[in-house]
Length: 366
Image (cartoon, rainbow, N blue to C red; front, side, top):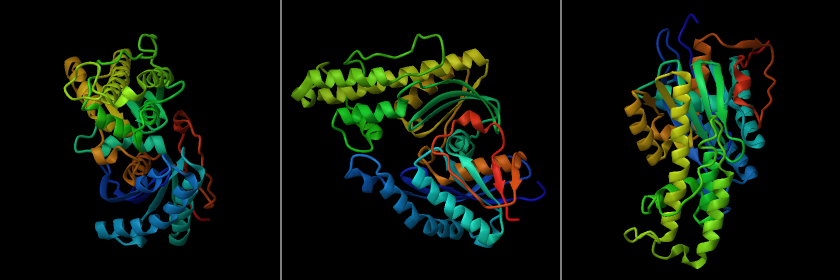
């Protein structure tokens, strides 16, 4: 790569519209120049979850104004953009098509290449946006939405799956358990906030596959146990805590016990992956990576083991354009792209992360 490149990244896989501008460097990690994010949470709260059609329509309204905002904040013009990157998958098909369509239209109008990126690779590489970026190789704990995975990462595009969820992921366990307790949307953060008032040892909940001997995850059994306990409590769910916690409701205790079970599994499996690979560096990425208890317990456990642990900045744990622009910039910097002659595009609502060890397509006009 003979010159620094400006990469405009667009994320529209679910209920957040994100746009960012990243610049590659001849040496070192690419630099984030500006980013902007619009969350649709308030719109979807009335429905108790994401409505795909509404999400798609809102992305259409937000993406171009956010792009202008980012370019203005970076002091750059649209004509200076060298590559337009977008989330190709996984995600909601309609939402992905908005980002893909806008990115390819921009690329065609500018005569610049367009790069379709994997959403989870964006999360995986998002800690490189932090003030303390990791170095390869490392073990990655990817806990984003419907995905919980442990991977060995030897470089950009060099990913080895060590273990993954076989049913509900950690994020789904948070969200579904929150719904069972009558908490609002988004459920995961609501459960984590309530858990701070409760006692994590109040209820004995299962830790599925904790002693399985492998690195796979399963949280559906935990969700079922939470449902059983919530039904058993009935109207007493909002009564004073059964464990004697000061002023805590049974619901707070159940939330704390649920969070404790999820976090214990994530921490112990991560330590097992580090021991298995012999690596001394852990990267945690994805929305659940913002969980306070998870960070506290991982930090303590890794410090005792002499392991460095890295996270994205808190505001970059959720879906965002910065992670897409950064992942694209790192792939370009590593020379991992293939050019095509047209701006034809598709999206991949279901797209396994281990399928991207080969370079994605860099679309260019004929």
